[in-house]
Length: 221
Image 1 (cartoon, rainbow, N blue to C red):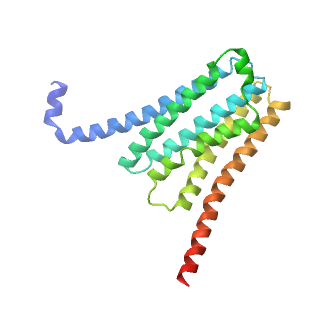
Image 2: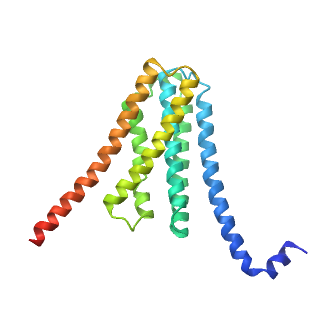
């Protein structure tokens, strides 16, 4: 019996199979993006990982990879429609970040590469820009939450992703016996700045919520 005849005889199973296929394709796409970004991490090890610039680049890549993975998992756990849209939108963001990383690795000559700012301040800013830039998308996927709750839940997720990425990067550096001196100090400073950035972002929404609550009480009195 042919595959087409089986499909004709069992129409009720076609929708189920299609749904399962979409779920598998979504999971496959997320894993593919994850594998591509992981490959970038491996490639970065081929160029003087012991230098401060390369260790900071590794930290950036590992952080962004894990932040996107955590957000993808959250969106996939939503309802079917919004989860599907969220995953698709986040895949675009992941691709853009991947392209950005590749351009940083291959851009220009040795002089331009040496001019790239990989200080803790610059690296933490790139991580924060990449992570916090996804908050609008997170809000779209969680319209049932108020803004303060959205901010708290979002920061919890991106903080988890960042800390996982930081752990991965520092483990690699430790295994290479280069996590010492400036490499260790710069990584720790970057970690502190990113955590501070997350806290500042959250404080903005918490303060805004308190102001709105106070304003509401004044209007009601």
